[in-house]
Image 1: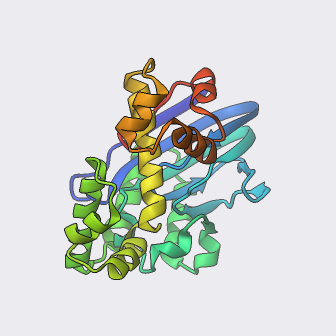
Image 2: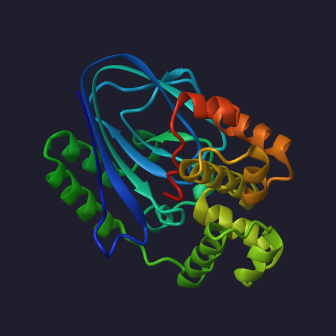
Length: 264
């Protein structure tokens, strides 16, 4: 039986952490889960069997940072699954990791490769704790200890930009103006704080918006959906859907119920 729970962070951490989630499945039969780009960086811990990833044809590390993605991945699993995940807000991970987040782009980086003793200690302590409440306490103690006072002006700039993106702004020049930065400087700072260049990130958000609209209006025409999401036309929508999810919109709807992690 699967046991999946989402836990909200404390008020202080909410601007930086979207949520924590926990998944347990005992003696799972061989199965596959497709993961699509969602616009978030995640820190994940496998306390049971590891998952096999189609993106690099090998098992995921026991614990790792997962950067921004612009493509889908199939994850294959079997046996006893026990996963703990920290999902950061779009500009949140930068508060806890002293590195330009663009280095994580399209990557799954094992904690062992980061030479981070605090992360390694958190992994060990989570492995010894089976209670979700205790795990959340350990995670939040770790995050509070790691919290870095960012270059406040840049964090506020990019956070304000992301709010504009959330409400539909897709013009990069306009977003650079919102940040009060030149075009090249904006792209560099955005990539450093979000972990993707603005163009790729806007593609993911546009795709997530399409999923959200399909979630609320499953009978909407593709032409109308393309218009509401800012695609050039229906062909552009279908092409982007296939690139980011592996399916056309029609095929996607026939396989699963649409859901947006970003907007829902």
